[in-house]
Every structure is written in structure tokens, then in C-alpha cells.
Length: 405
Image 1 (cartoon, rainbow, N blue to C red):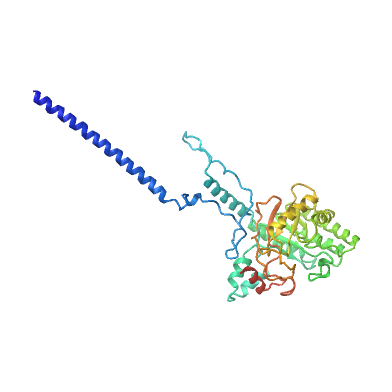
Image 2: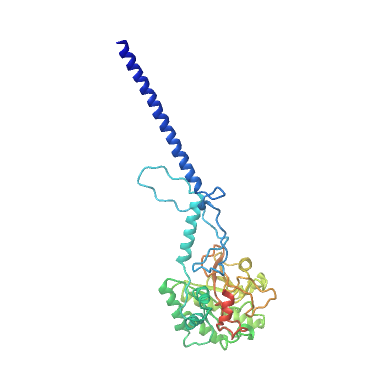
């Protein structure tokens, strides 16, 4: 019996030792799994110890000439949401999730900005000189660059000839085309008498009475959808060639034009000529704008600048805000900027007529992310001459290619 008890005691001790060894092996295995998991996480990190997704956000700049995007990038100083919309609660009773990580916030932000840019896209009218050139020059070595970087971008449609009998139908063709696609057309009435002070773009209506009647017919074509009206480039900034009485009469007609547009289509957004940052002082320009009705919500939504010019976008933003501050009027007044040819800024010698070395600017968008800046537009279609590389307003492929390449 003593021998049997000794055997049983030895067996129990042996079993306890085996159990201890099994437990040690389980612990060791768990350690190995944990180390493997950490090692796998470390292998996903870059050389700085951050994951690729957690890298600092890149600053968004103007579209590169090498890769002009079909969807415009937001402005680098765009105001960003601090957090995305909270997710809907789950059916299970789980703790409410905490604030998203910065990486998740940035991703959601980017998606929201892209959707905003798409939701109010600008209209590309299918009838333009650059599109005619693209269709007729398929074998030209410049074709791909001009097509992708200029012809595929939305641009303004100008009405620069005094044709009272057809103006309503022509404007309606543009505005109805935009409405059919859910996009916003940009139209430019350009027929005020003595426009351009007799320069390269001289012409227009024979007198202000005829101009007022032409404006009424223009307004009849605006339809009922969203439309942006760039009212008479240079008509205010370049009005010193007129006598004081002539200037007052012109400004009265421009104020009347804005009222006619907004009465015909309350969704029309009308912008008045503010010149550009290298021209008149903000206070002087604002005083003329006020006389022309630009401070009245009955006729105006704000001002435009840099049409057919080359001033840097940042300079235009600062200038337009100073003009708006001096102008007064409702807080909702804003500005639109022509960015079609300002990618390299203004030439140092002040040349304005098809100067060399200029580049395409920001792609057109109504989502600028800048306070009081309603849109970046291509009012002057890149490649259409100022009058030096070709006849004024005519498309010149060599000039377009120089701007785009």
C-alpha cells in the first residue's frame, strides 16, 4: 500500500509539472503572436514612423501645366470643416464613437469638397472657336494639348456684336443648353457704345437708347435657371475717356441693365466691372461702381476683375475685397476673377496685348473656398487674341499652345 500511494503521488506531481509546462508554452506562443502583430504594423510604416495615410496633407496649388485637372482643385486657403457629419447610430447598443482621427477628417473633407465642385459645375458651350479648331485639326501636333487643357474647360460666351434681331435667340440657346445639363452658363454682354475707348475692341451699339433696347432683348433670353452675367468688361474701369456727362449716362444704362437682367431672371447673378489690381485704386473704382448700380441688390451680385488680363490670383483676391469693402452694399456681394491667362502673373513690362511667357491659370470653378470670391472663371478664352497675335477676338493656335504647354 505505501508503495501504491507513493506511485500515485509521483503521478500527480508529474501531471502538475506537465500542466506548468503547457501553460508556459501557451504564454510563449501568445508572446510570439503579439510580437508578430507589432512587427507587421511596423512594416506598414514609412521611414518616418508614420503610415502613408497619416502623412501631412499636401498643399493644393493652381493646376499644373503638366496636368490640368478636369475637376478644379480648391483654393489653397479654402476654409475646411473641422469634422465630418457624424455617422448614423448603429442598431446595437455600442458606445458612441469618439472624434475621427485627423486622417479620416481630411479624407471626408476632400470628398465633400469634390462633391461641392461637381454639384454646381460650369457650362461648356459646344460652339466656340477653339472647339472648331480642335475638330478641324486632328492631325496637328498641338491638338492634344489644346484640346485637353483649353477646349475641354468651361468658358464664357461673349455677345459682342450689335444684332438686336437675333440676340434673344442666341442668348437663349446658351442658357437653355446649360439648364438642360444642370450646369451654369457664363454670358458676357459687350455692346456698350464707345467700348474700349476706340481701341482694338471698338464698336458696340450706336447710342445708349439702342443699347438699352438691346439689353432688354438680351434679358429676354436669360431663361429661368442659374446664369452668371459678366456685364460689359472695361465699361467702368476704362471710362475716363468719356466726359463727366457721358460717364454718368453710361453708368445709368449699366444700372438699368443689371435691373433688367435680375427682373427677367431672378436667379441671374450679375457682376460689374472692377478692372484689375494693377489699374484703378480700390476707392476710385468703388465710387464708379456705386454710380453704376453695383452696390444695389436690385441690379448686382458684386464685381468681376482681371478679364482679359494677367494679374496674379492672390493679388486679385486682395484687390476685390478692398473694392467690395469700399463699395458697401449688402454683405452678400462677391467677386469673380478671370483666371484664364494669369498662371504666370502679369508681365513685368506691363504689356497687355498677347504678351509672351504667360500661362493658363486656375481651372474654372464656383467653389473657390475664398471668402467673398464667388468663382474663378475663364472669361477670356485662352488663345483668342487681344489684337496683336491675330485679329481681336480670333483664335490663334500658336498663342493657345504657348499658354497651355
